[in-house]
Length: 116
Length: 110
Image 1 (spheres, rainbow over the protein chains, first blue to last red):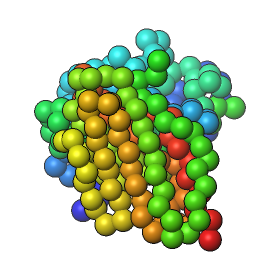
Image 2 (image 1 turned 90 degrees about the vertical axis):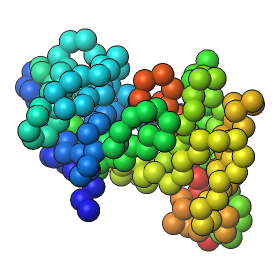
Image 3 (image 1 turned 135 degrees about the horizontal axis):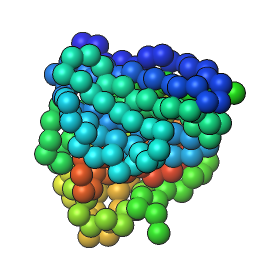
């Protein structure tokens, strides 16, 4: 029973380039969440998606960041024109369902983005 | 005021002792509470979930929830050096996203 999968595990980009981070949820899970952990800081929610729908993107910066979870394939977090402040660990989590109670989320290994 | 507060530590306990980790929260609507363990450079690992007032035990771990006092704790009995990690308290409030505390770093000394 494979867990949440993320790739790449490490990603190096130069300022101004694009970063694409991928997440495949656990089997049977239809809810995907992206979190960011800046160096020496806590985990912060970015976006919550279900298949073909963005449910809540209140934690995502308004510019340069976008996310999708297509009908087929993994969820993708896209960062355009990266800046050094984007350097962080990006974690994806998945859960099987709503409602809010009993909503255990399981995390993938993360993608560590370094912007040079 | 932060939504979820934890003492950053480090909390240092000797091997075999009980480690007590505490967390307070401000959102009275919250219904679901979680403890995650995160080793340095790794992803958070879910170790306990609790939804009702009282205690919940799982092996060496006991989670305690007091909604009236807005307080969640995690007790680790017979602490081992391998328990040394950062422990993250999290809750689900409005919406389905997790709100995390800053974490408490636990050090178990042999």
